[in-house]
Length: 266
Image 1 (tube, rainbow, N blue to C red):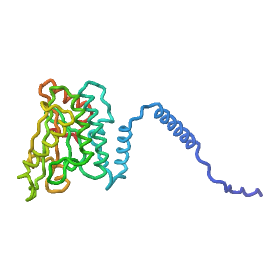
Image 2 (cartoon, rainbow, N blue to C red; image 1 turned 30 degrees about the horizontal axis):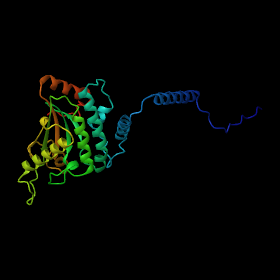
Image 3 (cartoon, rainbow, N blue to C red; image 1 turned 90 degrees about the horizontal axis):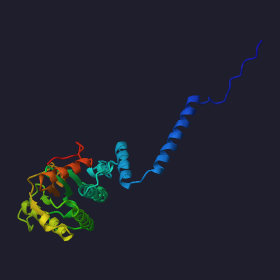
Image 4 (cartoon, helix red, strand yellow; image 1 turned 90 degrees about the vertical axis):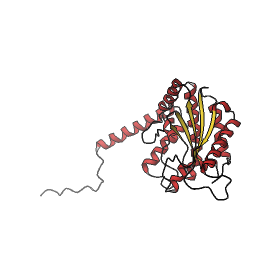
């Protein structure tokens, strides 16, 4: 009578293919680490990648916005053409990304760089610049932002005009306000930005301001969030000549700011 074969108590070994797969993953990781070590680090690209990952994993609910702005998308795709307009647009984009880092913490609307019919524009939320119902620019961050933008505007071609436009929501001005209505308030805010830009080096011959009150909203006025978006100041860059207009628009389009999901045509 044969002996009964004893059952082995040792753990089941991993299949051979899994060990080969693990080696492959280790080699791929090493390869990407080498690529990273040989690449040029760009903090804006890193911020873009982190923001995309955070948004995909939904880890930013209730915190910093996961929505990627025009500028961060632009900085993920650097512009090859290095003429003066393109370089200035890139610098504006970088300034806006820095400013949005502070705005995101407060949960308000972000500064955006958008396409416009005449060229392109910077969309500034009013809460960055002004107190409620007032037209005096307050805050070191706002003043620093306008100073940096004004220094960049000087690099644009001389046939590019700067138009600063103020807008409000549909709430009437306060009874004790120095402004008669939202027309006055929006115009005063636009003029305040114009004066600040001129103070920091923008030529008075290439800039003007105007107020549009509550009559050109970009969002609903039935929610606080929509009203916050409507309270804004736009700094528009308008080419006076058709060929310059085409060049200016091509610059902003080549910058990667024409994603249909976020791009706005005015």
